[in-house]
Amino acid sequence: IFSALRPQQPDALLALIAMHRADQRGEKIDVGVGVYRDRSGLTPVMRAVKMAETRLVAQQSSKSYLGSDGDIRFTQLLGELIFSAQSVDDDRRFGLQTPGGTGALRVGAALLTRAMPDARVWVSQPTWPNHAPIFAEAGMATLTHPYFDAKTGGIAFDLMLTALDEARAGDVVLLHGCCHNPTGTQFSVEQWQALAALCSLRGLIPFIDLAYHGLGDDLAPDGAGARMMMEAVPAALLAYSCDKNFALYRDRVGALFVQAPSAPLAEMARANTLALARSLWSMPPDHGAAVVRMILDDPALRKDWRSELERMRTRLNRMRTALAAAHPLLAPIARQRGLFSRLPIDPQTVEALRDHHGIYMPADGRINVAGLNDANIGRFIEGLLPHLEE
Ligand code: PLP
Ligand code: TYF
Image (cartoon, rainbow, N blue to C red; front, side, top):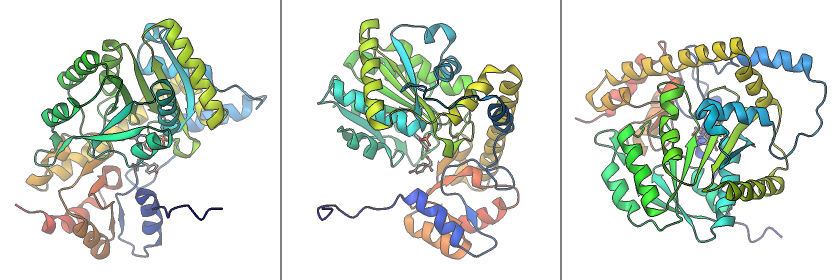
């Protein structure tokens, strides 16, 4: 047993956490793994989350099983936050609570392979490194399309569309809803329209990954592409993560939303998704979703959450502006959104920055902008500038 197993690469992003921790230098800078940090470099529990947790502990009278779809009110409120009350009531749509955005992607991929065994998934080059393995485990082959234009720091949209000419009806197209990981790029309204038209015309299934809702421009604009896409096509999936915008990371909070071409097909897809969820994790963990439900259900907590989220977003965008002003090659960072941007540097430079300046980022040059603050951005720029050409 086990002798046929192959060695596995550790997750390079998670490995950076340990590397940074082991570094004894006082002046080190962590722009590695994607968690929000405040101006002191901390990832605190949000105020509204603390309040809701206190109430939850006081009020919860049972921890008995809920069921495979988890906290139904949580999913309802989240759906209303992303879409609107009336579109959540659409009987061609359903949602279920999942263990994080990862769980939503995984059970969604399983549903898609069960429904369409020959379907393939198209992902952007580059994308979050877990995307391809998640689909592979569910039995779906991954194809990549060009995406990032390193020269402009924007999206190589024409090249993307040309590559998608090769897509077959029933193929899945994975789209980052906002704040693309790892490039910080986002589709414009016109680009979402073009993608929606392409998916409708060619029978492609959009699978939207919305992991940074509210960390780009605001909740409404960050969800606009997803909303528009779901309105325009007969069938689509959306994987949502509350782990960044509610800072609940380790509590694993997410949901999958599915839209089918008709109400009976939606009911069939729902029954199959619940069966798949039972075989994957039986039921999702309750605590984090209960907290999100309490926040969204209480006007005062909801208001406080939104204002803290806005402060996070404003801080990110302020760091972006400061970084972009430091060198012409960094200018696109001001237009990008969310936690990430990709620096125009090679892996050797990434290593040199780590060795000589204690600056930690993955080999592709992705930075987590939240790792920067007023106390360290000067040192970061000073370390980086000699490595930028032009
Ligand atoms: N999708 C993207 C693009 C991400 O960056 C992440 C980050 O963790 C996820 C999905 C997964 O989110 P979660 O931690 O909720 O599983
Ligand atoms: O891309 C990131 O840094 C975040 C966090 O296996 C993350 O999405 C990274 C790797 C991983 C899980 C989460």
